[in-house]
Length: 230
Ligand code: SAM
Image 1 (cartoon, rainbow, N blue to C red):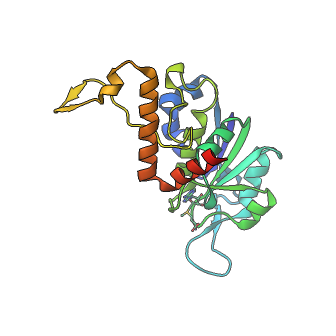
Image 2: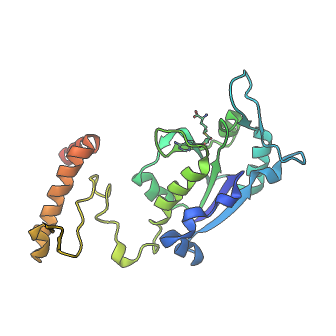
Image 3: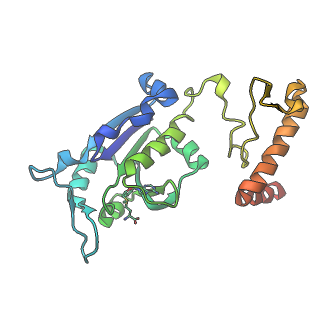
C-alpha cells in the first residue's frame, strides 16, 4: 500500500506509525509513506494555506487553490482519496479491512475549520471520521486509520498474532485475556483456561464475548443477533 499524506505538519509523520508492527512493516517496505507539505504549494513566500470563512464566522478555512495544487501534483485520478473529517463516515474494522487491500491511498489532513467544500466536490473526496468528537487536526485521525489498516495488510502481523479472535472480527467484542502468574493477589485465572480442553475453551470464550458485548455494546449485540437470524 502506497500512502500519500497531505498535511501542513509533515513533522508529525510517521509518528507512532514508525514504531512497533507498523514501523517494522514500513522499514520492510510492506507499505510506504510519502508525506507532502501542503505549504510547498502556497503562492506566497509566507506559505499561506488558509483564509477567513466566506459568510463570516470564527476560524480559518484551508484554501482550495493551494490544496488543489498539492492534490494535482501528488494524486492520480482513480486512486482512493480520503479527507479526515468529523462529518465523515465513521471509521470501523470493516473499513480498515477494505483499506488494507488498497494499492494507493491519499489522505488529506485538515486543520483550522477544515477545507473548502469545492475541493471535496471537485475530487469526489471520501470524508472519514474516527468518532464523534473534534480533534485539532486530521493528522492524529489519519494515523489511527492507518494503524488499524496497515496491521491488516497481508504479512504485517506474524502468525502468532492472528486477527481471527480479535474484537469485531465476528461482530463481537473479544473475550477476557489472562496470562501467568496463574495466581495473582488472591485472584486466579478461570479454571477452564487451564484445562487444555480446546473445544470447551472455545465455547467459554464465545459465551464471554456474547456477555461482554451485550453489556458494553448493546448496539453491536443486536446487530450480531440479527445477522444470526438471516
Ligand atoms: N470545523 C470542523 C467541524 O466542526 O466539523 C472541525 C475542524 S477540526 C478543528 C480540524 C481538522 O481536524 C478537520 O479538518 C479534520 O481534518 C480533523 N478532525 C477533527 N476531528 C476529526 C474526527 N473526529 N475525525 C477525523 N478527522 C477529524
